[in-house]
Length: 117
Image (cartoon, rainbow, N blue to C red):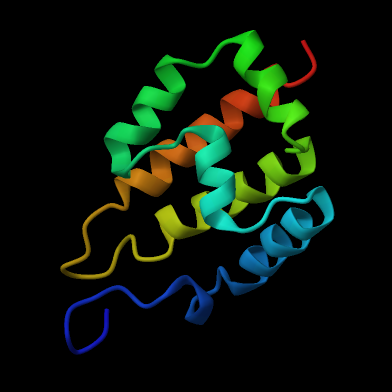
């Protein structure tokens, strides 16, 4: 946390290299940034939005993600980034869990497991 009590941005954390991996894969896959990715995925806002996305996950939705240009490599990169974001502040005094990142990492893991079925 900084002196104002906010978490440092992901770019200043150990997650920076993972963020760069995500950005490179998004460019490769024709995804126009994080917002475009979130819109395709239907991530919604916060932990509740990620939970809803898991609840609504079906084979046709996975096929839609593929048709929109999302690759398994991008899903895996996002999973690693979300895991990093969820873990980066654990154990620090006064820091609560990043539940949104944790649930989104879970969503990406589910997608990885079901991508080719």
